[in-house]
Image (tube, rainbow, N blue to C red):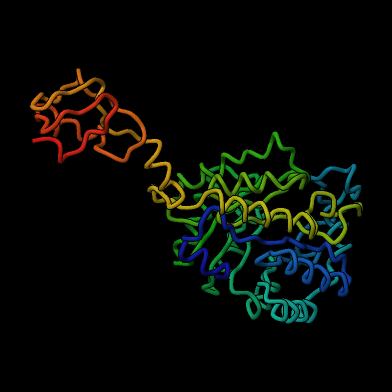
Length: 349
């Protein structure tokens, strides 16, 4: 099932989320690294890999200030940072799309301008819109015209802004999914607010809800918890080397983290099991031996009536269940029943 189908059907299980490895521009303009990111994401078990498509002069003014941790990325201008990594354009993304097809992993790239959205439409089945563009009606309206499902991040957004963007998209009758996101790079665990996943589910029950994560990868439990809270799509920055400085390397997962996440989700799937409450096959012996039956608590003479004074409920449950007590109270015995003997129907009348 691809991302478009997830958004349209809204029916994948919470313990089996659709995982997007957000490569962004962690390829740093080098095709061999971008190809390697695709290969590693596919090998690690990601459902999709997502890039970012932009040109610095189309996304930020030259005076645009930073909003990230300067200790990890010391570029103080958005324009200068974007300029470092805006080397790829249509022909490069066509090569990356072809590699994704070879590796059987879905290709996604977030467009940050109309021109990139136009050529990406030839390659993507779903459009991702960045948190930063949730108020960009120009871009949102343009992307809606392609009539493809949209995945919208909601970082740094208030509820009224989310409603506004959702209404723009709904008017175009385009399938939509929302991602909870905190727009801090990196995001402290204390600021992750995973409960907002539940908040979005309550406010937009008709939409697919997911999570775009910027916390440090750690043991990947944050993403596991997001799945338990109902995130049906999980997006996490992805790198070939977490030790690299700058850009999105320092808060990204790598292929080993991705494999850990997949293993934990598999274990969670096994742990969650069925949503329909019933006795399972391995409980058969427990049902028999741990439940109770009606026994004689003293000698019951032939012809004596069964009462609460001469019976007791004891294990195992191989005889008359105490749930049937109303059916045997007052019945008379057809034979003498010894103390601690199992009461059975054929000895009653």
